[in-house]
Amino acid sequence: MSVLVVGLSHRTAPVALLERVSVSGDSLVKLLRDVQQDAHVAEVMVISSCNRVEVYAEVDRFHAAVTSISRLLGAHSGVPVEQLASHLYVHYEDRAVEHLFSVGAGLDSMVVGEGQILGQVRAALKLAQQEGTLGPTLNELVQQSLRVGKRAHTETGIDRVGASLVGVGLTLAERVLGPLPGRRALVVGAGSMSALSAATLQRAGVTDIVVVNRTHDRAVRLAQTVGGRAAPFGDLPAELAEADLVISCTGATDVVLTADMVTPREMFLLDLALPHDVDPAVRRLPGVTLVGLETMQESEAGTGDEGHAEAIAAVRAIVTQEVDAYLSAERAARVTPTVVALRSKAAQVVEAELGRLVSRVPELDGRARDEVAQTVRRVVDKLLHEPTVRVKQLAESPAGDHYAEALRELFNLDPKVPEAVRRIETIDAEPGRNTEPSKKEAGL
Image (cartoon, rainbow, N blue to C red; front, side, top):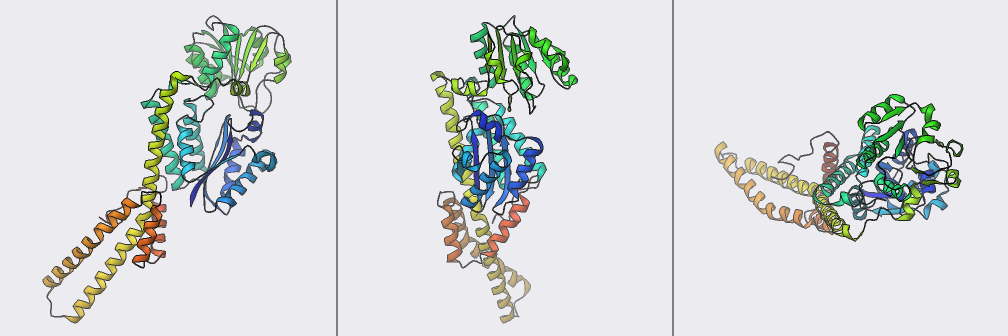
């Protein structure tokens, strides 16, 4: 089994296409289940956000799995797979690990270094766990990607490269409106992105913040956190008429802000929703500026500048280090079942020979038999110690699997034994179970 990634992001596809492919709620659950039901897929997780849709899967056949996942993405989005194919990227095995760690570290985001991606990865992990589509391989890989992301933010200045998508949007707003303090801001929605927007506005010096949401209680709670006020959703047109800056990010599937709701005047609207909250026709109104995800994508506002090169280089170094460590540990783990099988065979040989000794020399007393048994076992342990330690070390290299194969061939090990050990380890490594091997399993 190997890890495969099939997806598209702001780097490979226009926002309009991402809108069509993006899935959430019941649609996301259905995609998870449909992918897992494929004969070549053992585990699956999907990251779906405004900037990316990626399917992570553990598969037994590369080409067949890529074809199936691509077909399912097309079927769920309604985009013909032939049209989708030119925007898809595929990463496999080592490259898949590197890609996920880079995503978690914020290197692949539209705004380099933004921390929201960690929450998105965590949400994808939780959903896959709840739906039972995640197994030990992806669980450990994704958990490690979260640790890599936390390390990147803790040990480097990557946060300063681009605090968030909202921060970049406010920078663009200042170019149109001038200084933001003293302006009235309207936040439409009360989810996590809206909360981030309100907090970022407050840090930017905006004190007049209004929150509108379909569920009024949530709007009230969010407004209280930033010293603003909440307004009923029915008052949205009236609040729009008074706002200088509007940030909208709801989970609606249809347009929330129509052109006839907006009064032509100097006004800046930031649409962070996917699908869009704001009718694109708003751009034709005199004095009104509408910035959506595609505008930010084209402006390269989130690429940072040369002053951030050191932080980005530091994060890339962390990702490289963590990828190497993960792959080395994973390769070493692959040889463990073979080592266990070798020691099991040796133990069987020892017990068989001790049995023969007892039958041939029945006059040996118990004390003598115990001494002989201990001596034989020590000899076998010492003979096996060096090759088993060495093969574990060699297994960490890129060609490590070959050493396990050589060990199986040299000692004529039954291939069913390592596979049985591997199945036991897979069960023990399920989320919530103790994954530490016993001393006996570890050959200690």
